[in-house]
Image (cartoon, rainbow, N blue to C red):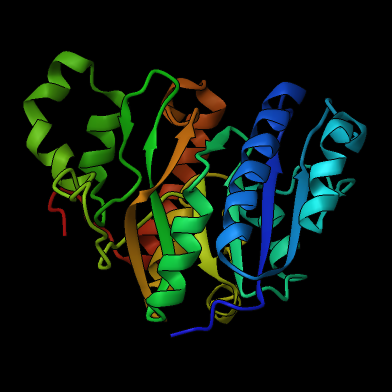
Length: 283
């Protein structure tokens, strides 16, 4: 069991044309959660790296000026990485992962808002469970509906059902989809044998992230978190921690137009070619 003194945390957020208000909401929630974390753990260092992949809406750190006093009080460093262009989601996170020397690293989407006790629950759990490499949270969308971030190994047919069948026909495969999304997971206790977790929020041991080389940069968008999950699963356990709660506004990749559908298909082909094709049967 790791000592609860001198714990360090690095955080990377990847933004692509994100609205200023969305980024401020995320930072506000992060700081509130960090304050609660610092009240229970000797938090020696916090670094927050905002990686800007934007083509048009370039970020300026001045939009966070109202938070400077809170950052100073926490001893947290907020930095901006930009100018690299849109290098993809995983590659952008890797820019921060490579620089991190912290005990734990949090990977975040820009459309996430975390609850006050989120980091305290997550870090405490990882400290007390050294065999766990990654913790994934309980998640709801903006309407309060649960999102299922934990997954079993997928089949091509399952993705076809989720992405292309009308809702009426998807109901015919509700048991298959529920199994894929691990609906059976308890909301009262952690589960430490999850195969795949979502990249919108991954609280990781930094040494495990570096041991597998971070994200595979051959994925530009989609499936990079599936691939990373499986590789992290070879060096530690992936856990679902319902006490750790967030709100997430993303998803719906197949509703974003033809270009996103084609990216999804290309990344899916790479994933299955790398890790094994499953056309009908789910593991």
